Image (cartoon, rainbow, N blue to C red; front, top):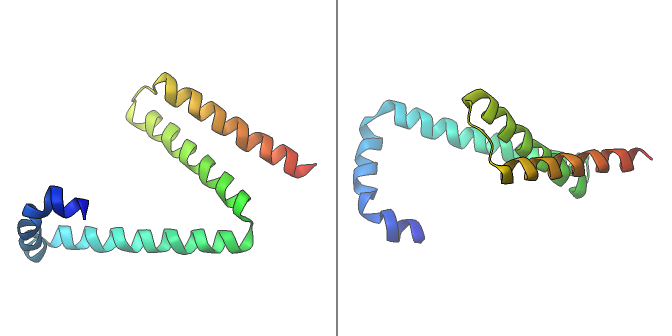
Amino acid sequence: PIMYATEGSKLPTFLETLKTDSSLQFNLVMSGLAFFIYNELATYTLKVTGAVTASVANTAKRVIVMVYMAAVTGKVLTDEQKIGSAVAITGVLLYALIDDL
C-alpha cells in the first residue's frame, strides 16, 4: 500500500518498460529466482539445525557481507558499523565456543 501511495503514478511507465526491455525482464526473473532459492535454503537450514543456530548464522552472514562489501568497494565503515560488526562477531564466536562445551 505504501508503494502505491509513493510510486503508484510510475506503475504504468514501469509496466510499459517491462514489456519492451528484455534485460529488465531477465533481471526481474533472476531476482525472483534468487530470492526463491534463498528462502528454500533458509527453510532447509532451519529444518537441519535449530532456530537459534540459524539466527546466529544469519547474523554472521550479514556481518561478513557488510565487511566484504566495504573491502571490495573501498568504503570506510562508520564507527557504528565497526562496533556492530565487532559485537556480532563476538556473539557468534561465543555461541560457537559455548556450543562446543
